[in-house]
Amino acid sequence: LVVPEDTPIKLNIESLDVIHSFYLPAFRVKADALKNYPTYVWFQTRGPGEFDILCTEYCGLDHSQMLAKLKVVPRAEFESWLQED
Image 1 (cartoon, rainbow, N blue to C red):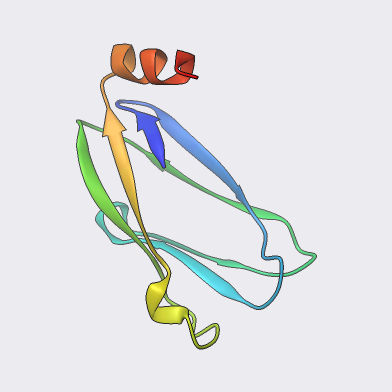
Image 2: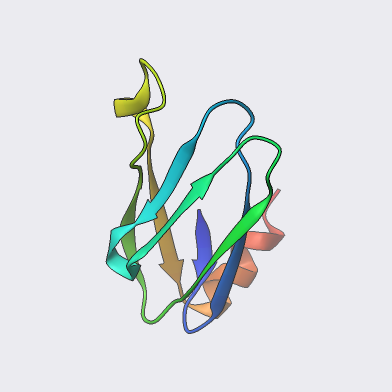
């Protein structure tokens, strides 16, 4: 997930199967993702950096594989990234 710095970010979340839990510890953000129940989570970015994203709800055999990164970049770099093919 790539987002610009110094920006409020809103993520719409919903599960396709079981309960998941979107957790962004560096921003103290956690929200459950449920099937057929769209919701959202928001946070405010500051300076650039990379941050862990985890699922904190046991969701099946591959639960431990549900890891991702949030990459916060300067606005100019974000705009350039958007224009890439």
